[in-house]
Image (cartoon, rainbow, N blue to C red):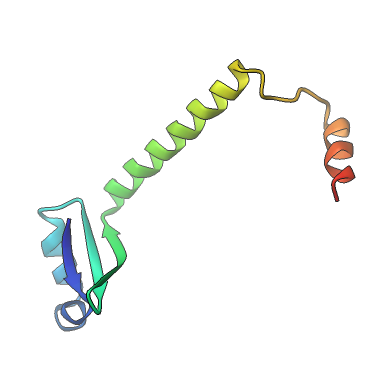
Length: 85
């Protein structure tokens, strides 16, 4: 993954990020030699969000298949969660 220093970002601006993203899906911004931030284009971000949501969906389906769910009415749910407050 490519890196841009904070100083390079200050001097060259967004064009520095744009140049690096032309070759890499993600770019890190370093401050005093430490990686602090990750920058990516929206298409790559949206792809990663879709992956995250797909993983959550698979986990929820596995919970349903393994019986790790509670089937109850809205009133029962409110009563159950209110007891814990």
